[in-house]
Length: 149
Image 1 (cartoon, rainbow, N blue to C red):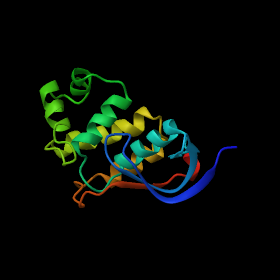
Image 2: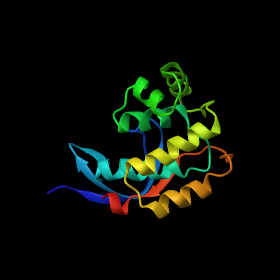
Image 3: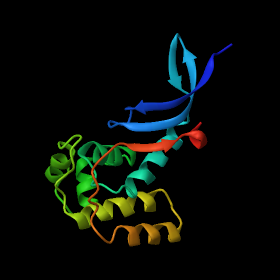
C-alpha cells in the first residue's frame, strides 16, 4: 500500500524555474516523496499564471513556453516577428528578466491563452490587465495544486 500525505509547501523545479506548490498531495515512491499531480494540468496552470504574471518573463519561462508549444527557436521567433538569435538571447537570460520589448512580451502572453483555447472574455481581461508594462519584482509562481492532483 502506497504512503500518502499532503505537503503544505513544495518547490517544483521540473519546468526549468521554481514553482511554489501549496497543499500538494504526495506519494512515497521507492522511498522518496513525490508530488501526486497531473503534470499536464499543472503545466497549463503554470502557463496561465505566466500569462498574467505581474513581473516580466524570465529567460527560463520563455524557454518553457516555447518548448511547451513544441516550437523551434526559428518558429517562435517567426511567430513574434523577431530573429531566432533574439529568442536565444531571451532564453539565455535564465532566471533573470529578458530584455524583450513590452509589446512582444504582451503578444507572447496573449498567445499563451489563445493557444490554450481560453474564452474570449479571458483574453479580453488579460489584454486589459497588460495595458501597462509589468513592473513587479520577480518571484516564483505560487499555486494551490488541488485541481492538478
